[in-house]
Image (cartoon, rainbow over all chains, first blue to last red; front, top):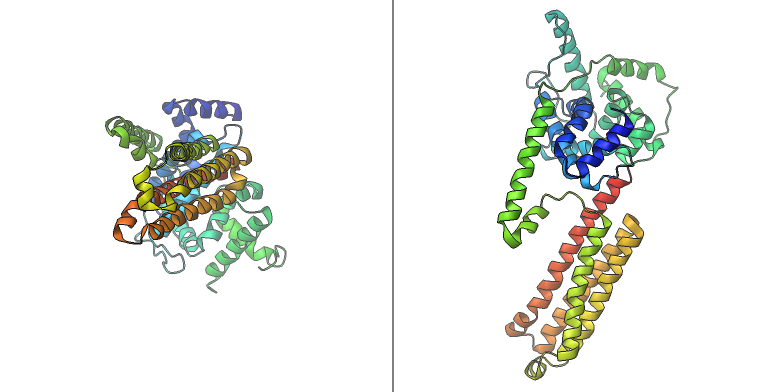
Length: 184
Length: 203
């Protein structure tokens, strides 16, 4: 879906055509689900949070300016929902350490069971590391390296300057490195 | 805040970046889009029913599900409240509370047309400010609401003391007190909803 079609779909949704919203969900379900999954580390929670993000976005569609880009707005809504959930559940990334057993992982997509196990192990490792990174830094790292957003776009989503965004990403990476090296 | 030093330990961080980049993408589970759409349909239907069945409470019930409002809607709330105060000011200015009320409540009653008119002017001013300056002046609008609340509560307390300070006088002025507080809280909520919309629009 190109930018023009997306703007048209947004206008149609704003004019009351609810079913057209499915096109936006289809386009952004991957990034939003992935964002929620990397932030929470649980497939089940990511599923629920991503759904919630789209519902919140739909409710607020009337306030969205169709001339602006949709995805930073959607990402902001999704991140707010994720932050609220993490805060509400008292998930302190400094305290809780993933052991893998209590986490639910999504289908890896790898057909070979051995390959699937390797991928799964890698995911456990990534999540265990990410989970120990403070939320503010984690979201910057996730947006940069899992969502491939530019620093400019991340700064819009997080409502901070580009310099502050770079700083957060850098600090997030440093934190991950410390955790992986076992110095944290 | 520590300065950015990407070059000093870039090798170490590069391994972290590679570690992140090598991690496979996690696709949403099958049927995700359908589930969202089902939830959307379920989400929208009961709200329509509540609005229809709720009578005068319908709009209030719906208010809980409103995420954000634009400048026009926000200003409309201020103008509506100002019209109410303006009408009260004109009415009491022309008619008064009646001789009996004036005898019982004293000079406080004579101040009421002035109080209503000033409150109306404040609310009109805040409504205009919201319309003309978008989301940039919302802190000033909140200060205006605070002024309105101080005026309303001050008027109520002054009335309470002027009338005699007993339970009867408290009951007599309570409608002014409660009215001002309710309207102030409502308008502040509207400003919060508009602030959310303004923040979203900036992105």
